[in-house]
Length: 382
Image (cartoon, rainbow, N blue to C red; front, side, top):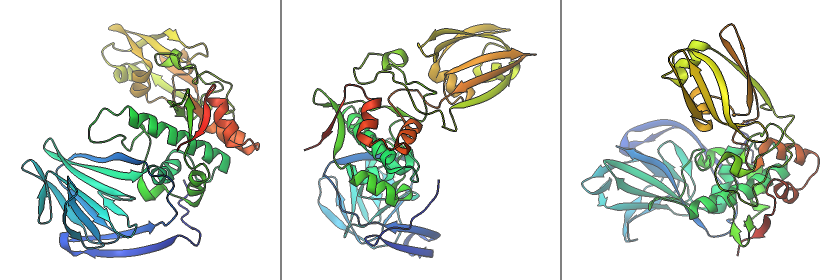
């Protein structure tokens, strides 16, 4: 992915080479950006950046306020210095301050350093177990500046990026409403959405987010589960055929991902190699689909080996064999299994490569998302 950080006049860029951060003895080379685009909306997300770490470096591009868990000011941090956060008794320690929780809030729209990256917003530091948890408190729209650049290519057509912005906004709000942790709503991985702070912000991702500000997909007034994936292999799936309950807006539709680099792929395994990866069955003798979707995606596969057999589910199969999807067929020759696959991901909801193709054909983003989410409405949040 191209790291093109050539931004418009409203963006100002610092480049710092070999900064001595004296308080913690940090000597690092660092290139980073402070972006000053206007903020849309006022929905704050809680994104966990680090979990259960023994020590963590934090800092701020500007001077920063330090508060305890109830908002009382403890002091201030000096700009561009690194500070170590450590667990202490039943709370956390930062410099001379100890509290059950500590919140660092940069002034003047500054950015916050958490571990190894710059982020927008604030950071809440919490004692969790034997370590420290760092949670980024960030505005929804600013969060999306990064997510769109991490989940899609910033060089893609604008209508594809706008589609990704609408879907990512919808997905973030849906997952936040279902969050099981009392401390955070989302993480930074594909379990929710990939989020890398300022590192994956671009001019194009700002335009895509700002150009769709506050727009989400709803059904009967509620934000939908806006699942998405890279490439379906020609046709997306009904959600109940892959996961569990049917949803009126996650219906299988014709995809337009035939030009995707992951539309077709191939992997080969020896019988012994596949047996070791799956485990507990010896050398593999045959693969027998037990349950498939109407479009051929394998949900359960029976693997027969020299020392037994087992049924393996789609998620476990992808993980064990490192497959792009479970939409595949198998051929065997001289104890070698050839897997001929299509697509990348679970095949539900928006196909990113399909949206890319449609955008190149001049289809606007609102029509793209309505194609992949049948019976959903594009709604602007109040």
